[in-house]
Image (cartoon, rainbow, N blue to C red; front, side, top):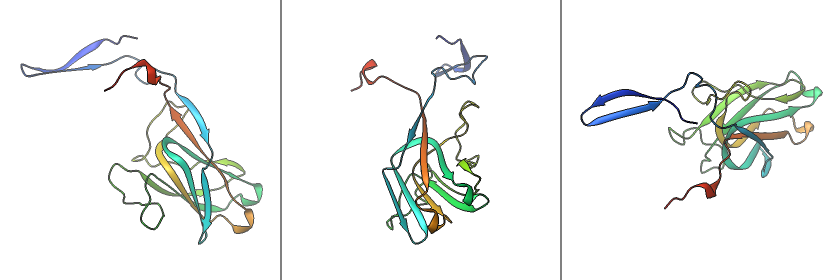
Length: 165
């Protein structure tokens, strides 16, 4: 699809063009979702550590049995680990980290992302952020291992469609 071009700034040394369309909110490519299960889950010192195996833009989801309804847990999402093996909240400016509380209700629960961390997507997808790791505190020991998933969002592409050197 060709988009009309608009001249934004012109000087003899610089010409900047940007594409625009009246329906800029619609993605040019249909976004897809994929549900990723943890590659590794471990309990230690009253917290659960979850590794999804790869960094991806997505949403974190945890299932809560009816017996856990009303319980509040702490959820941390991030891209980097510290030397102690825990999520690093100060890994760097462009490396994301989120800590939030989540009041559980029966069924699937997703934490609300902060404006600074959320990447806007079409309304049917909702906000996403990049993360690989998750930590959960406040999950009761007698409830067993929490059922969690990373719901990734991506635009499909064909690696064979282009040539890079």
